[in-house]
Image (cartoon, rainbow, N blue to C red; front, side, top):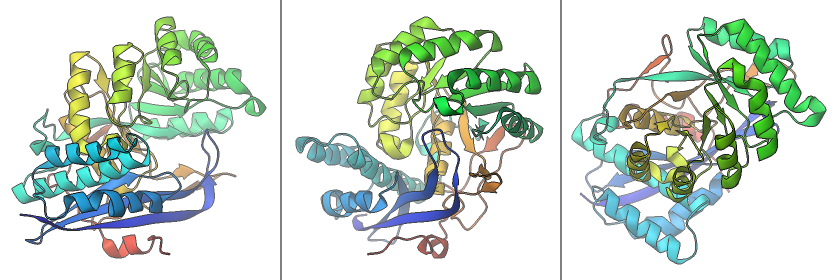
Length: 385
């Protein structure tokens, strides 16, 4: 079996109205899909996480990485990962777009290998092999306090026992104290048995994050995610020493090296890798061993990616030993000015995306990622020129 063709699909889906997001309005969903095809007709599909520039990632796959892989045995996944990374690292590229491009290829190779074996992907990862995983609702979007309380109530009524709440308001929107008031109101509305997960998207500095947590200590918060910018490892460490609220992060890390620094400095409690950014399943497996050694928890990130990355994260959640929960992105996203919009790139399969029941999500049982891409639907979002 040899790799015969590697194709990329740069995707962009413009929304009629932007999604309300802590770091600003989100107008367009983007992704780069990778197809790896062998000389005997087998195909695997992966996804590179993309924010804003899908053609950049596609060019890295096509021009830098594909030439290394054509004619090679796709089952040599670890060796191919090492060779891709060694090539890029020699040029000074070990993070950013290049790791995202590698991630899409690696996911596709694992999907191909699992399809060839007839097994669901999580089983060939040889981990915990869960066929169901706990998940949380992502998320309660920024609005006024009554609006956010209503979002939280609806998510609990839908059966979720864990919900994520956006915090990190700018000062014109009331700042930290407005966040505190909203979280208190949500806790009162949903009661003590629902896990509240807070996501700041790096909006605080370390001192503000410490102050924020002191206000919320009595509310039994399950985690504060990305409290400070992702490169402020010292800020993470300071916060973790200063609060009883568990600190989560890692969705912005590339490869295992940034995670190594966060973990070795005891700056984090819950690790949130994005398999479409970290370097695919190969790097995620290495990270899983490090997390296990330090007795931490894992909560794979999904976010505003396309459906392939969401499925990949679900298979990672099924395999990783120290799983806490999986991020289930609600299909209806709060839009600016009220009402909702949907991520058009999530449901790009020939069957509906898995839906949770009572806070649990079934892992697809079919070969590979378990779903087939509807390429006619994908072509509607493909960027050309």
